[in-house]
Amino acid sequence: MTKIEFKDVDFGYDADNLVLHDINLTIDKPGFYCIIGPNGVGKSTIVKCLNKINIPLKGKIYIDDVDISTLKYHDIATTVGFVPVFSQDAFSMNVIDTIMVGRFNHTKTCNKEENLRKVYEAMRLMRIEDLGYKKFNALSAGQHQKVAIARGLVQETPVLILDEPTANLDVKYQVYVMEMLRAVSEKRNLIVLTISHDLNITAKYAHKVIMLARPGKVYAFGSPGEVLTQENITEVYGVKCRIIEDVHVSDEDPDFKVTIPHIILDEALMDRAD
Image 1: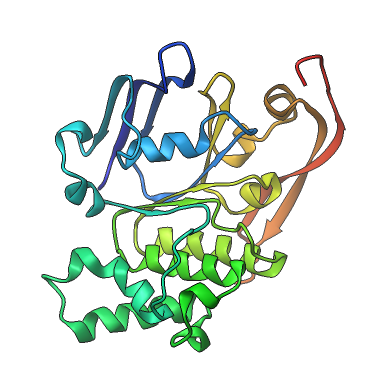
Image 2: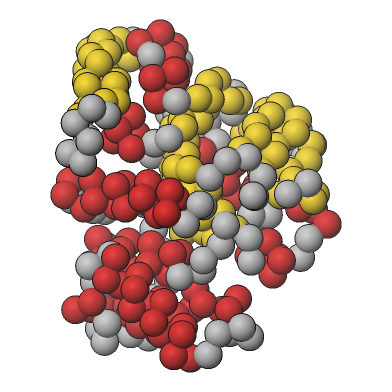
């Protein structure tokens, strides 16, 4: 089972301007993990440290007890897949070939037919089969996002990071993508890490929530019910709110019920710093 550990991690562009400060975090079980917090608390920065795009000023990051600073980028890419917030790639390739790029680490172990099968599976999962032969750089922003997620899925890494996977998607596909990512984490025993700005979607679909707060620290880590409390949201986001407990009953098993916090936002608490 893959394990991720952050130990006393600081990151910044210099020691006087830290984005992350004293990050200590252990993820040792598969599941769907959502990273939340206001702008500027280091949500994208922390995942970029995990795949070695950012190098910490202090502390260590371990994958399966191996210090990632000792690993080559290719070695990290076999364990950690990454889908950025919005692909700026201006590929002139068609969608099939664009997604096939995600199979780079499998070219030595899988033949072309197997790689294509994986690409088509991801396209079906993202409901973009009709886009296969269209040029990537001719797609809409929402279509770009779906292709980018498919490219992440075909990497088949035990850890998959998605930076705001629902960006540029309408509400229907936001819900579908979050449902799908939770299901993928369960069926494939993956650690799926996402960055999210929607607290209610996070509350409904995340197995665990990582709440970051200024100055780039882990404020809370646990189940949605443990993290998404009125006190935490008011303190971290500076917004008054109410929490309603929404009881969800499983369609497959009426006796299985889950209580999901539903956040109703109230007034913003503005101060001079704002």
